[in-house]
Amino acid sequence: MTEQRQRRIVVSGGGTGIGRATAAAFAADGDRVTVLGRREHVLSAAADEVNSAYGKGLVDFFAADLSEPEQVRAAAAFITADGPVDVVVTNAGGNVASGDDGTLEGIAAGYRANFAANVLTAVLLTEALLPHLRRPGGRIVHLSSIAALRGPGSYGGAKAAVHAYTFELAQRLGKDGITVNAVAPGFVGETEFFGDRGTPEFIASRVAQTLTGQPGRPGEIAAAIKHLAAPEAAYTTGQIVHVNGGAMLGR
Image (cartoon, rainbow, N blue to C red):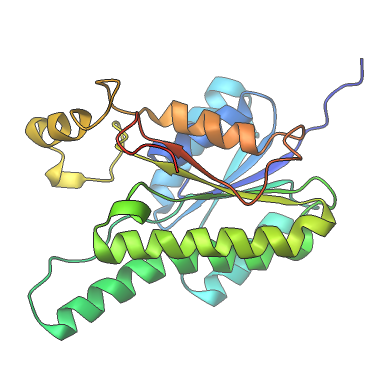
C-alpha cells in the first residue's frame, strides 16, 4: 500500500471554533497546517494544543488581518516559503457589523464591515495562494452561513457574495484539477460567534429551529470541510453544502 503524502493545509480563522476544529481534523491525519487570524496569542494557544494532541510541529501560525492586502501578501509568503499548498479553508469572518443606529452612515458602515470581514478575507487569501495551489488536486473550501439564504442583511449579503465567488472560482479552476466548494453551517455551539448574545434562551431558540433538536458542533462542520478537501473528492465542485440540522431545507 502506498503511504499517503503529507499535505499542506491553510485554515484562516483557525484559532477558535470551527477553524480550530478543522485544523485539528487535518493534523489528526498527519497533515501540516498553518492557522491564520488576527490574534497571535489565540493562534499560538490553538497551535500548541493541536500539536500536543497530534504531533509537535504539525501546526504553525501567522497573525494577519486578511482584509488588508499587504498583510495577506506577508501571510502568503510565510505559507509558501517551503513549497506548494494543497488545501485552503477560508473560515475567517463573522457578523462584525455594529448595531444599526438608523442612519444611512451606520447602515453603510455595517455593510462595509461585513464585506471586509467575510468577503475580502476569503478572496484576498485565496487569490494570493492560487499561484501556489497544487495542480491538479488543489482544494478550496469557503465557509458560508445559513444567513446567505435568509439574512440578516449585511452578514447574509456578504456570505451570499462568497457563494458567487465560489461559483466563479470553480469555473475558473476546474480545468486545472482544482475544486472549489463552500460549507454553509446553521447554528453551531461552542464558538465565539454570538458573543454576549449567546444566552441560554438565545441558544434554545436557535436549536428549536432545527429538525434534530440539537446544535451543530465545530467538529461536524470540520468533517464536512475535510470531506470536500479530500484527494478523492475530485468530482464535487461549485457546490454549497448546507449543514444546519434541517433549520433550512435543501435547495
